Length: 576
Image (cartoon, rainbow, N blue to C red; front, top):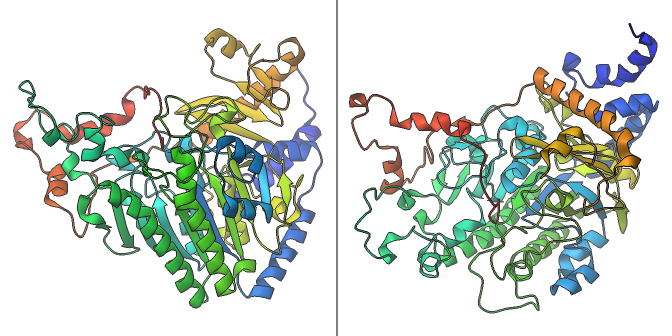
């Protein structure tokens, strides 16, 4: 029998035991980093003490913890902003975003989930989307959403006295428990779905951009028996509300082009009003400002050389948002006590993008929906005047779940983070305050839908799934050096055999943690419930077309079986 050096084993797991288990209300992390930390003999307690001193000094100087604005939009590759040369190549410019990046810190290794619903859930919960059951992209009608048992960043910060506001695209479900006002936000103005709904109108049907939705424009179909298959008259696209009150539908179900475009304009106004009101009340605030930003029915008047929906939407939505945000913070005298993080939610749509979208592949291979770097590496920058050194770049690995834990640390709210589940987010306060090389993450697990598809450790990446299943299972030709093969085209073979077992150990530990803390499932239930101004068509969605008692089963029982369907979504659409 092989002997084990007990002292060495305990040393290896010492941080694992003290900082990672649920005892003494510690945050639970499934983190390769913590084992690496113990192996290398690093002690972060001293650095944490120094960080605590810095944060205490900042709070004393400004009389409050920092305000936090998380501004996020869809489907962009690294360098999409902050790099004028890249923008010249693409035929557009973002001077306000570029200035934000230049005056703050840019991240070259910001990882996300590969699609927008999982990405948004990951940011709000600090957990990989697989843990909350939010790995699938939602379209109307979903009958599901982010479950009430999740603990969001808004709840963590609200418990610490922050004012919390949500403005923009949520895309986390259409059940009542998923509404932002039921997930910790004091006030919210939100879109339930993604950008594809910009086509859900007569213009989209008439142009054949969508098919079979607006039947009033279609030829009579003498073979159609079921006219309630789509039920688009009852769709709800936008909502508004306050914590503790009923939500209400905005624009009464209208989804014409003007309604869609007006949503981001209205969101801008409400976000700025919320910031002003919070500042005037001397209350720290957290704002999740996530615009829809792009319409599939573009403005015919072009303002960029690219003329694609990406470049045009940067000019019409995001640039005005960023300009007004910074102007407002300056006017209120709170710029120096406000952290802004600006980023995309996942990589660009490269699989069958709509004509004229401007959604081209970037430096990395693949795009949204993919586990290759092109699907999960995004542009990101952080601005905190006087705190984050301007003009800096961080090559440290960071994941969007880290924002959950980092924002909680900055707010002095880590005691509000739940300790009964895995929190994937790692505190990256040191990276923000001390700069490049001070990150605390050395790996990410990348899921594609419900499947673990890849793992990144340092600059090396293993593909657990492949077009060649045998090779993927053996691991012999599935490891890539991202510094020298950023497109993941040429696996290391003979020179990389020694990576196979260490990566297998990483995966084994990860899956053991999942056994200890099983993944949750999102709940199923009625859609658009408890609206104060629900339309008859929306209410009719919950009205049975027959006497349920006379049937051998409950027709609504299908809701409980949706998760059992095969995960075969085909090519992802925009906003997925």
